[in-house]
Image (cartoon, rainbow, N blue to C red):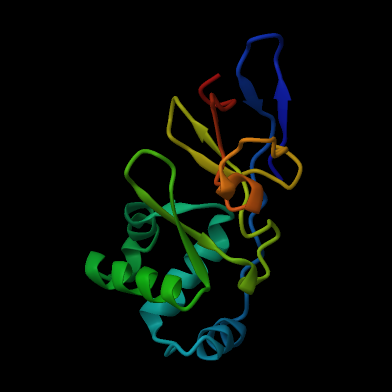
Length: 165
């Protein structure tokens, strides 16, 4: 779980811990989730899906490719599988303002964090982590845009992590 603390008036947020990763699922469970979503459970798709489960937070296409480098899947195969997982609703694609798509699990995969949730982005190293429920609270006010009132707002918190501190 990722916990934040305020360092003082006007200071940045400090990352106290890292997001806990989920335990790897059994291969049969992964394949069943893929098939239930209407996807074939190929070796590449299963590996990409497991990579996102193990990550515990959003990953870019390049990060997934790096983590799967030893498996020998080419970049196009990884991207196609990320797109397929997104279209099937197992993965959500997010842009955190840096023009780089990141992919993370959705609630369909028992993700411990709500579908729409805030992210912490380290301005030093670029690390991205999901923030737990309640870390950021939004209160709609009169005159706020309709999307804000309907709960479809995506929030990100920027600051420095402990590693960059």
